[in-house]
Length: 274
Ligand code: ADP
Image (cartoon, rainbow, N blue to C red; front, side):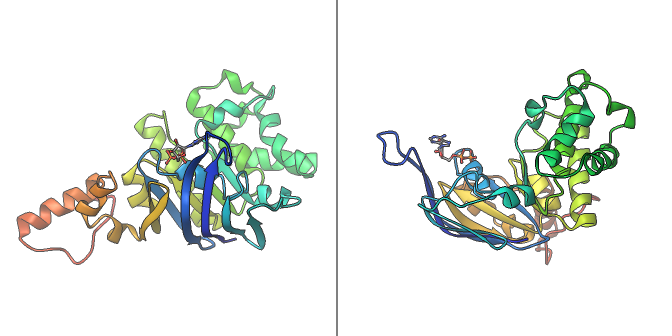
């Protein structure tokens, strides 16, 4: 399923003295089955955009196309259940939303509220705990007896249990140690590959954007200012600096080598080996 943002603007508290415009004519497409990263300095509008991907926010003007659904200003869209099922959002610190007595019940909660049978919801939960790297015996435990990293995985399994076609990740590794961060990012990449999940990553990590995304959108002061594959986006350090961003370490490393060699390599080699 693809998502298209067409000239969307968004203002918080519109029409009040506290009105704050957060997005200005944002316009880009996220084609089905791609891995997109959205990067930008704090306050650039990333979280506001993210909430348009499953109609948690409606644009103040412009159009959002989510698959075949159209979300426009001023018109309350009816029955957004299908959109909410198809676009799963893993919010920052998703473990804060765990609440059931057991891990099993927590993972089953979403699908059962969307009409999936108990049997099917349980089958999904059992499959997903191992997919997110947890042992089967956690299913009967209270989520609150788990470590922070394990709780995060349970919460992710809860989003995946809805069987989404698009998954939106809002700083999914915040607060985890480096090993946990890599495990989670690799897991999402594998899911993207195996299930052809359209993946949208909102991140501060230039390394993650460079390593995993097919395409990167840069947000700056509420506008999408630049878009392209990592090789192009990270090539020009000066432009990045003007958006208050730094190229990732692997790219800076390559630039150092190019400087030593006295010539440019034809492309940025964004691989693990470096
Ligand atoms: P980012 O996710 O890139 O940090 P945000 O989308 O959170 O950016 O914020 C974009 C702009 O909107 C900022 O100027 C921020 O202060 C403002 N903003 C965000 N949330 C609200 C809100 N609930 N009410 C008013 N202004 C907000």
